[in-house]
Length: 214
Image 1 (cartoon, helix red, strand yellow):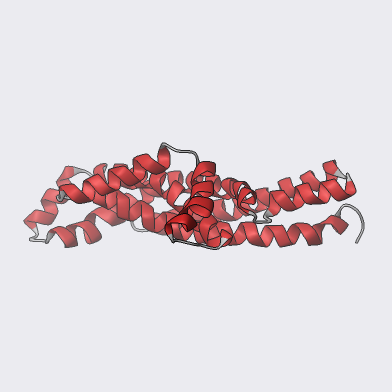
Image 2 (cartoon, rainbow, N blue to C red; image 1 turned 90 degrees about the vertical axis):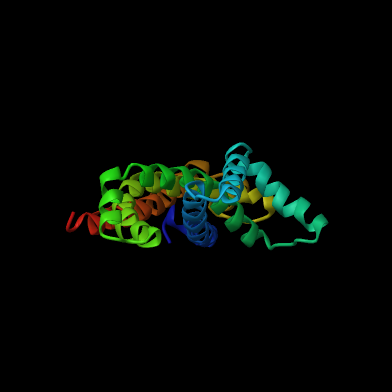
């Protein structure tokens, strides 16, 4: 391959790790955000307390420290995860903690009249949540969720600290052996940009999908 594309094969192996971390992290973040966001609005105090502890813990500490703790300290407590699983869980839970506030805010922004109309129609609280409130709240959640998912993508560069050879780490290794810094990091920049554009495209498609019929 002509330069600088001869540098792509080793970078693509790192790109695969970064993409795997991002997809796995997004799934964990989405589940954690909805679970913790709904738990904050629960009538049960213990669910609210668990949710607040989770959110404050993950927002109030560094993602890098969380990665170190999960990978190096948890095995001493008998819980051992692979580096890939650790990266997915920690990054997903970290971004999910921020997403939980997005979910809570979007649900609370649904007009009270909508809830009163559901009561008038004799809907149960569960029916009101899933048929009336969630469909109206999801469009408001999507733009901030898109930003958080791109932050998750960028945070994958931290996992090299727990032995994973993701895209940035592969770039650094390649630079050390070839000294072609400008070409390598230009390619790394473009690859991150393309991944971020894929996430933004999917979010925009979802926004259009949920906007239909509103």
